[in-house]
Image (cartoon, rainbow, N blue to C red; front, side):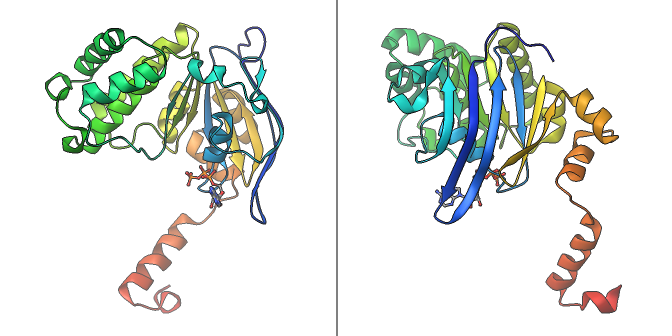
Length: 268
Ligand SMILES: Nc1ncnc2c1ncn2[C@@H]1O[C@H](COP(=O)(O)OP(=O)(O)OP(=O)(O)O)[C@@H](O)[C@H]1O
């Protein structure tokens, strides 16, 4: 694993509970500039919670989170100017046009209107959305909205990009472009924190993979390192092994039996 300089993100003994449910049970992570971190784990493992804490969207945690040398609990929100975020579920302002939305976001980041407009227009064109730049977002398809979110997260040329399942709804060609964009950004030193369930993409793009299960990190290394340790050939296999998952066929058969109203145990 290549490590450049000081960590850009440091997480120490991060714990978070919702009510009586402990969701993060002591996360420790040092993330270095220019890494693409593939952050993976089963549904409910705590991935989005970790990301939202780093973004300052969730409070009341214990432990330390430092981003760009600043403890985020200090109340200084300056670091937010230097990060970008594509959320898992998006709340885009539907009534705005692409231009209105993206210039609004650009201005929130402190950009001049014309600068944001120029940049957004060019990026929309590269994503094949030139024709709809002045149409309301409510008329966009799911994938088109996703592209707008991706553009909005990059307008400020962030030092750290947080991506939470960013590919949802995007077609195969757009995914290819997006993967290439991530490689280019990484080559220029952007740090990317990438949380996704699409194992083949995570496997290909990540310089380091961190697997979280039930609120704890259970694996951390390059894909090759994890493969050697687990003796599994694919990230999917490593994921299944480390999360203790077995018997997908049995579960599927039982599921189908219930759907069809057939007694599973009579059928097997
Ligand atoms: N605001 C909340 N209030 C109560 N419980 C919450 C809240 N947000 C998350 N949780 C719980 O915390 C746990 C972790 O959720 P989180 O969204 O971090 O999981 P995840 O790893 O991102 O899962 P997924 O892969 O399904 O997106 C889940 O059990 C979830 O129900």
